[in-house]
Image (cartoon, rainbow, N blue to C red; front, side, top):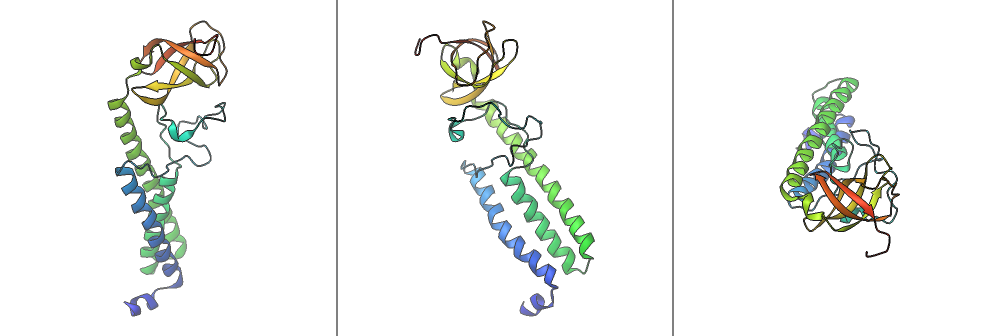
Length: 209
């Protein structure tokens, strides 16, 4: 074992060290996900694949940890996918350079493996989130309840409200029934359930009304 390690080129040793380091985090992420711990899969830099750039216009006092978004974005760049990228990148880089492959070629192929891993992991967990969402949420349960505008609702467009759906805090796409623009932070009542992903709301004129 010592002889094998000493015979490795320096770049391979670096790759193997990275591989072990990131593998520990990768395994922890997988275990955490299947135990329902989440594993902190936050977006990095507010980027997601559907191009909405994050939740701009949301009130600053929203606690992200008590929110389950109504439509799970297909997030490519996240903590989990970054760990996946570096885990595959480092392992493949270690194997390729250990076999004597040119460093430039090894880096390119390792990066390709890492990118493929990112997309695969993003797709798997996106599907898992959508299955969980479909099986547990019934928007009809929020009719008549009070919520708070999370993303501005324009007079002739759509935004989002934060309210309780099936005993859990959710974000639901919403429109103003009266045509009145409703800025983020406005308290509203859900008066209509238009579909599984859309509700009609009216502004509360008095708190608790």
